[in-house]
Image 1: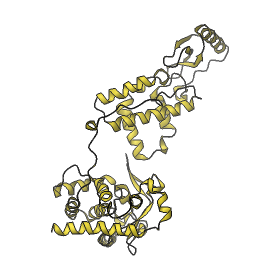
Image 2 (image 1 turned 45 degrees about the vertical axis):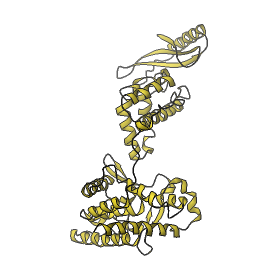
Image 3 (image 1 turned 90 degrees about the vertical axis):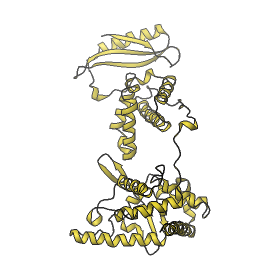
Image 4 (image 1 turned 30 degrees about the horizontal axis):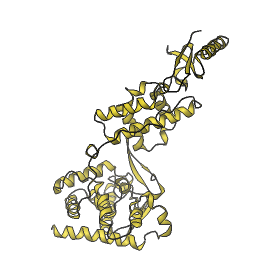
Length: 397
């Protein structure tokens, strides 16, 4: 029964990895048993000899790779794979897809193959800076660090604190202002009106969806998740309590990530009228197709007869891009820019706290404990936005 030892760099003086050869598993892979020992070289040699004798007295049990022993041989890829098997499912589909992409593109074939115990903060920071030199942006490097940090934290727990978390003390490289992407620009009211006018030639479901985004500042996934039961035309308001999340296989409807995202938002009279007209259109389409109209749980923007399936968020983004090009608006205006338009246009109308509440920012969660479901300020905000859009649309006629 063979054994070996080596000093662990970056773990302090007199820290050793002791390894005992166990044999080969069912797939033919060499397997070892490892442990960390702290003490002088002579003491480490004595401990290694003891472990070898101890192992020789035991029945030879060679663990398969599937058993995934957590110890000094664990690589970053092992830790991420373990996370994918145990905990990855708790991530939102969008976050899981983003993490999967980051792992495959920037970790798996590089630092992912290295053992966690053999890498220190210095090595990781050099790796982050190399990613930057290779052209990775600030957000990409930040995501890489997040994936590695979470995976190592889990591996440390699963190894009974035998493994370190070398990512914990690392810092990201600094990016100058010139190296960061341009911030999303808030479009002018005339640009928004031009886009909405161009959208009127699209499918009415897309046109109304874009009008709702512009009028309320809702996120695209929130608009796609609107059901008819969420729309209260009598009070001119909509309830935001779900979101459609893109996935590899299509899209899923989920609860919002934070409680602050659940809110009732006032809408202006023209937006309410557009939604009411769309409801009549959707009901007529269901009748023509010979299916029942989902009066309560049907999705407002659904392209399926009856409203059973929600509109995919990417479809709404593509509709916006088509309308933007048709309107001749600059390419730096995106669908999410309409949310920035809302935030900017409301600065002079309502308080910062109420604006945060209307847009579903988490910092305003406590504020809504002291306000009505659709407070007077929010109604004023809806009327202000509606007035701005209608005035701009009339000027462009």
